[in-house]
Length: 103
View (cartoon, rainbow, N blue to C red):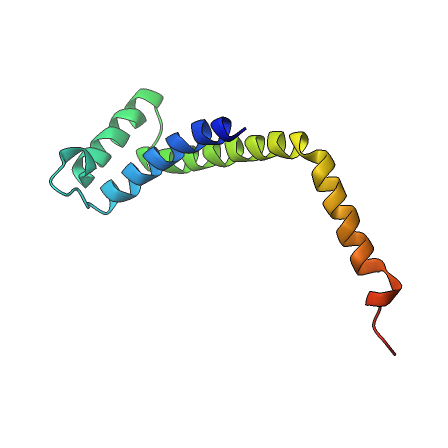
C-alpha cells in the first residue's frame, strides 16, 4: 500500500510544487518555474480543451481531491477490521458507566 501512496503522492507534489513556485514567480533562474511559462502552459491547455485557462488549476484540484478520496477509501477498506476495532474500543471507553459525568 505504501507504493500506491507514493505513486499517488508523486504527481501531487510535482504538479503543485511547480504550480505554486511558478505562479509566485520563484524561478531560481530556471525558466520552467517562471510565471510566464506557467501562463503559457495554461493558455495552451485552455486552447486545447476549449476552456478558460484560469479554471484549469481548479479542475486539477478537484481531480486530485477525488483521487485522494478514492485512495483513502481503498486504504480504509483494506484496514476495515482494525478501524472497526478502534471504533469499538473508543465507543466502549466513552459509553461506559465510569466515564459518565457525576451528578
